[in-house]
Length: 277
Length: 277
Image (tube, rainbow over all chains, first blue to last red; front, side, top):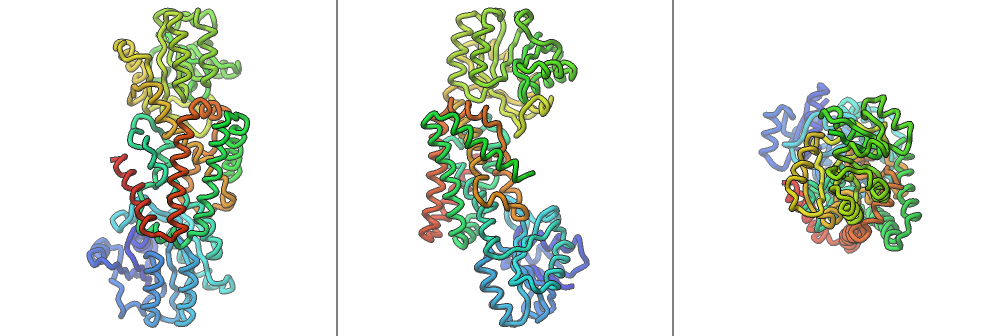
């Protein structure tokens, strides 16, 4: 098959490399930066540069650009895409993207499924992309409805052939609610963590817990600003939730209330055990 | 030399095993749980069970029990300890321990240095202890003063022979201030993180960032309650600091203020880069 990958950053570049390594499919890559297009060809991550003429060859189009750019791209190219093509995006939020793209797909006769690969690095860009980024990872899919079983089966088969271990199917609404907790809050908390005046002098005073808490503090602020604002209702809920919890420990400390503090800690510890077992 | 290790949990057990593996010293171990004493002997982690008769043989005594128990033990055994013995504790806070133990040591003619090995696991107990726990780790030392160079040199040599990579010398006050940030806050934030209602349904929706943020959520609530309360001033400062930061992102989200949000994220990201480079 012919598979287009639009946006050759960390995710897009890794998708190209994974498809080339794990399948026989032909990869059409496109990035706004023409240097990256050339480099991806030389690197054998792509076979062709995607353009307005060859996009109609593509059986699948994987969009791995920012959410607003995803919608813009699909709007602009909609009439060039063949009717049996399936477009899957890789954006970090799903409600806004899916609402717009389901409509564009319907009006133009092709299929669209929302997607979100659960993999990443604290680096971005093609130069960090790698064929094994998705090994062991989950791909979330948010189809418009779950009636079209053969479409879901085909997409699942493709996703697994690329290297993902599992496919999780859900609604755009549920995706955005959970991802606000599992990913967006983690980045905000980590980014906030390093703002203490003590952060500058941690060397020799830290072990694994500091390292883990601050690993994702270094992030692409442009991408995350767009993602966070498109999920602000869910993210504000999660910030409120952790701030309320933190203030409970603080109150117990202020009151020298050992028993309450112990129960708060035991509660968190028990929840963590219950989740992971 | 003869080295006593009091408290055969994760840290004490690992100290015994590291001394036995890396040095020729004789290890006298003691735990309140007599089964652990027997097991440690059979496991070749210790050579003898420490008691009131043989404690006077010991050149070094490493205390790896909770802070209050550290002070209690030293008070109780002070008259049995020989004058040229050096006692080092391994507690997670240093002000209260050092204040009491410097005094006990002075009154009884032996030496005391506060210590804190920067290593751990999210498991506790002798069964998780291992000889290589301290490889690559830092040991923080808080001597009463830095005038006694030969004492510091001897202790540093011992610490490094056990397997630690670096020794960091500081005051008890500075230790407690920084450790509130690098370790205590990390455990509180991680423990608070899993209290969101979304925590139960994260499977298939999470990657490395969730895993990192919640790794130390599972903790020994009895030990941490004691440590947190003995450092409440510093820890409350750190909780306030991160809560204030989190509320800044929240306000930017509420106002749909992309530029402020971007700058807040960039600030955290830049700080992380500056710290780690």
